[in-house]
Amino acid sequence: MKNDIAIKIDNLAKIYHLYDSPLDRLKESLHPLRKKYHRDFYALDDISLEIKKGETVGIIGKNGAGKSTLLKIITGVLSPTSGTVQVNGKISSLLELGAGFNPEMSGIENIYMNGTIMGYSREEMDAKLDSILSFADIGDFVHQPVKMYSSGMFARLAFAVAINVEPDILIVDEALSVGDMAFQEKCILKMKSMLNANRNIIFVSHSLPSVRNFCHRAIWIKDGKMVMNNEASIVCEAYSDFMKKSIDTNKIEKREFSGAKNPEKTIQIIDVKTSQDSYTTDEDVEISITLHFNKQTFDYAIGILIYDEQGTLVTLFNTVRDDIITLDMFSHISLIIPCNDFLSGQYFVSVSISDMNAMFSYDFGEYVKSFNIKSKRSYAGMPVSEGYFRAKHLWKFS
Image (cartoon, rainbow, N blue to C red; front, side, top):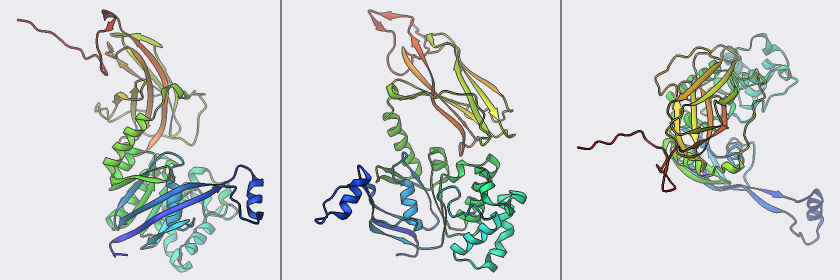
């Protein structure tokens, strides 16, 4: 493998045997002629790629696509069915919350145990301990069994260990979705310092803005196969288009807000309402959002996305794009669309609460509300406008 290559993967496949019942597994193991009772499921199918030293690579795709399986094979947690993986450098990973931690041991004991697994001596871990504890910032809880930790404390300690052992390659699987915004920002700054040191970061994320803004390159995996491997912005745009086209609004399960508060979230969407269920063209449309803050933060932005019945994004409203860069902790926020120009049809509202750089999502509600638009006028039975929207316009004659 070339010296400038960090990871090289050739024709990688991971196959699982699926049985209709436990009895079929037993029958297959005992059959004298080795009759096949299973069917093959390809979690990964013929994946080949190279990652150069210093690259940050995002891996995107729907749940079950094979993203986490790929990371586990790279780190050696899983063995491939076929193909090869070559790694040039020391890997540190956060694949699952608390993976590699013994719940009965204290945080300190787990730090040293993880260091030993990574190949460090106790003396080397002694030198790293202060930076790990400072980064995790969980106070005296570090001396308590980790089974007492909240998910946020788990994430803090796990990430602190993984990133402060100075790996050549850091692999993260959605671990940054846990924890408050201040800690997430600290993690991002630390990862950026790794890039300056020509180290690799590979992470799975469902946040396209995070992948687009942070990664040099992105890999899209679908049903175990690699669909695209290109610049992050190109792959994210293609994946976004694919997701929009795959939406079946007739099968959408609307999210019902219970009003229950989740203390794990810095900001939470409690409710989304429209002033009416049905409007006519030229009426004001009002969309109201109720938020709850568990922690103090002023680094947040609000996005409201409106889709048509085909799942096409019709328009997007965003506080940052409207130059609203400072928001107090408002509990109730309304967007008013005066004299709406929507065409007749049904529309669906999604709401996103993120940091102002759109790197992390505090909360997201997809298709949480719908409304209908009826046209006031028609001509010979036809609507007065066609397309995506009815633009306000003037005629001049002379």
